[in-house]
Image 1: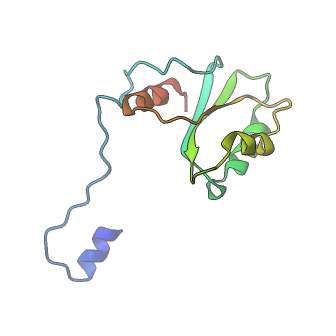
Image 2: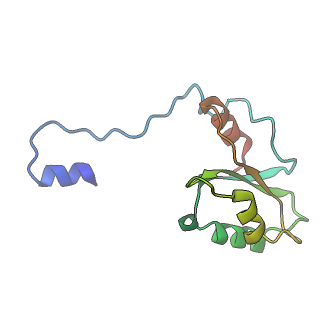
Image 3: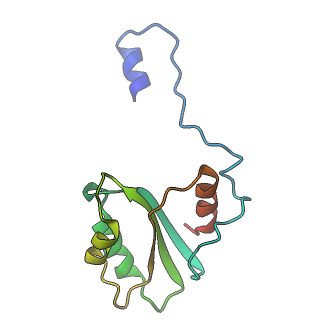
Length: 125
């Protein structure tokens, strides 16, 4: 979007669109999975900054509607607070009624870049 806007506005200097970098040493399918993962066979992973506008309530509602605790599935949340003082665990208890629901696991810690790739590898989707 921005590159085309600059070109249309008359900018003549050479311009290139460079995507975000990914280090293939840490992000590839062959990397060893994260060791602290749920026991469920199928694991969903969502990675985001926890905040009101992220639709966490919708994610929880959809997950609970689709999956029960009788299925071999879990949701892994890799989240950090969107702002200082955010109490993610407390909000999660309020938003996600666990009775009869498939489990949700919270990873609210900073991970080294090599660990994040391992977390991705340990997820099914």
